[in-house]
Amino acid sequence: MRSLRYILLVLAGLSFILGARGISPFDNWSLNSLFLASSLLAFLFLQFEARGGGSREIAALGTLAAMGAAGRVLFAAIPGLQPATFVAILAGYVMGIETGFMVGALIALLSNFFLGQGPWTPWQMLAWGLSGASGGLLGKIFKEKILILPIVVLAFFWGYLFGWIMNFWFWLSFVRPLNFGTFISACVASAWFDSLHAIGNLFFAAFLSRPVAIMLMRFRKRFQCVYLAEEER
Amino acid sequence: MLPVYREKNTLVHRLHPLTALLLSLTPAILALILENPLYLPLLCIGLLGLIGVSEVWDECRSFLRLGLIMAMFILLINPLVNRQGEHILVYGPHLPFWGNINVTLEALLYGLFAGLRVFVIVAACGFLSTTVSPDDLLDLLARFSLRSSLAMALAVRLYPGMVVEAERIKEVQLARGERLNEGKYWQRFKAHLPLWYSLFQSSLDRAANIAEAMSARGFGRGKRNVYKKKSFQPRDAIVALPMTIVLAGTIAASTAGLGSYSFFPSLALPWNMWSPFFLGLIAWGNLTVILLIWSWKRWHWLRSKI
Image (cartoon, rainbow over all chains, first blue to last red; front, side, top):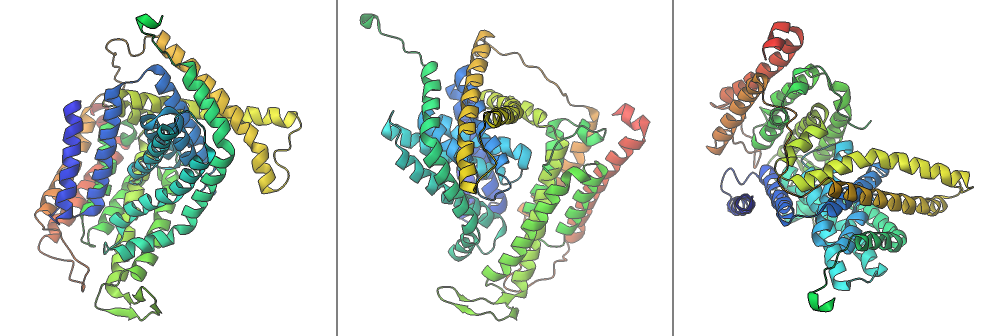
């Protein structure tokens, strides 16, 4: 399993380098980008697998992913407004970088079972996974404190970043020529949806961060087990 | 309408998930590889035929609609942002920092090609979602990544329960005199917040119970037993063979640069000496599988043998 992880990473790197040098067939960025995103995701999933994790973590992952997906499906009628980003960020903030990534990635995979799987799924998994991981990084910086403002700012920022990552996929796959101008055009075209996503995240984070973070911390502490050293007993 | 998998009595629904994955993703991968506009319509017709013969037309309709919307969007945006091409159809206004917005024939046709490409990909994904059970896909994932697929399976199971729980909490709140559906948008948003807290709390409690139940059953202790629900059958080989030939043939020919085509700076004739090869290969692959699925439904002898 370990060698498979690193083979995937090497293949992704090779595919990127050959694509960047314009060597056929790797210069077909529609296919190459899909391969890059999928292999990066597979690597991160296998990394999580190798680390292991108890039943508590798996149960929490499943529940949080279901919560995020339920929120995404419930708000599907309003384009851009989805609590999935907020759930992923908060999961990362309280439970750590890896859990945050996995919750984000699983929210995308699960909700797309109801909204439709497609070539966008690996990119959404990656984008939401990274939002969860960034929440984990924020949690690491502020330790046990629940500070609303940084979470709100991060959630707002991810409203746009998520859109730009998805635009990047769209731009690589379906827009030609590949230059800065066409990428900006794609971002301008989605600005309204991205803004709605960012504002939605801001509200979710401002009103739900504290109570939900307290609940998650309580859940984490409930299963926390600390072994005291012999001399401390 | 949300796309939902429904069990049906067709050959595609009886396939091993890996074969079904190959069958669904082959048109999507071909659409991404092939750059000649001559082949995409044939690929699109073949895929629509596959959807029809697999009896998932109604289930796929939402996907086809989404594909059409995305295709229209690409068709509109491409000629406006793409300034390549020698044959200018419309001289547009001059924008600061951007330049002239001229619509060229090449950019317009590339937009049409990219739109058709996205339609084929979305339709192929719709075909996959409506013909392969999510449980089968998760079983497939579990062979490589047990813990994440277990978390995923748990989430799939918890999701419907969560919706029922949300309804129950809502009814309790209404019975207590909460005015959830009255007032302005902002007031309704605030009234719904306690519902979210309760739902979150009860879901986490359920997660704790699940974790304890898994520990009690010895999760993570020792080697795990594997239960295979679906095994490979002759029908899988018969469907996978033409798809593999089409995919391998197209990849090999494209890598050798035989199917390449460029819209810019000016359009070239899409027909070349390799066109009959690509068209024949795609048509043969599609027809073989469509005929097989059609015959399996009507020919009892074939059904009993494969």
